[in-house]
Amino acid sequence: MIEIPQQGAAFFASDLHLSEDTPKTLEAFENWLASVAQDNTLIFLLGDLFEVWYGDDHSDSTSKRVAQAVQSAKSVGATLYFMHGNRDFLLGDQFAEAAGFEILPDPEFLLVNHEVVLITHGDQLCTDDKAYQKFRLQSRDEKWQKNFLALPLQQRIEMAKAIRSESKIHKANSAMSIMDANLQAVAESFKGKWPDGYYIGKSDVILHGHTHRCAIHHTLNSPAPTTPESTQGQLQKGQRIVLPDWDFDEPEKNRPKGGFLKLQSSGEFSLTLFN
Image (tube, rainbow, N blue to C red; front, side):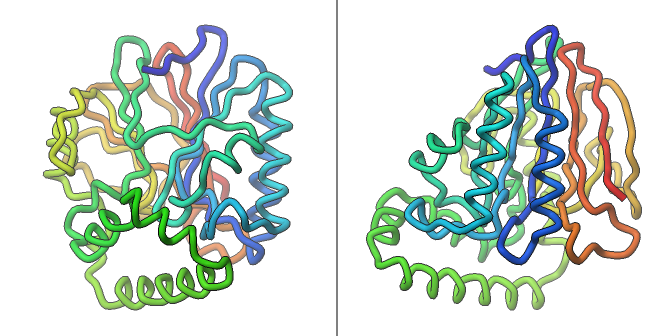
């Protein structure tokens, strides 16, 4: 279980979806990472850092700049962690070691002021999306990944584009509600029963991204705000904190361009949104 250093802080961000098509978001990420990185700082990138990942043998200017930004953050004393998302689940040890961050299992746990905080990308909580959960189960299989990564790079790129196209059609033809976390799955996860059926241990707070529905849910049934705002508070049992997605290139009206959560060892937190 990870603990935040007494004199330090932890920062959490997810769903940046970086690619060659997101230069402004990439620049915002580089600036943010440089601004929060210092000695005794823990930085958690909770999935979908990249829009897509074809394999560690593929490289472009975006992945190179991300690696450089992570290396710079590490050089000043920060510790960086990465968790796979539904877009970059093929990111492997080769890139992680070159960049300088540690790949975490999903879920992972932090101990913060006697509270157990479960951190996850969040896609596993969206149990109503049966088609996606079926694909997720297949694509996380070690044999499936080994076979896919053994294909020629260009073939992988074309297959990934086809899968992404199918995903967009599926999303457009599905009810918005199935793209959100299932509240029963959330309730069971607090009790220690993960959606895959395994017992993972009880938690007091759940922190995730993926849904693009930034909110501080103080109770299981509290709704997400129509327009999320920056806020501060203290961790409390039963809270579910949903991180914002980032988009500085084509931001939606009345939605933040991105943001992050800062968490102190005392349990105090601040959610900062970029408007």
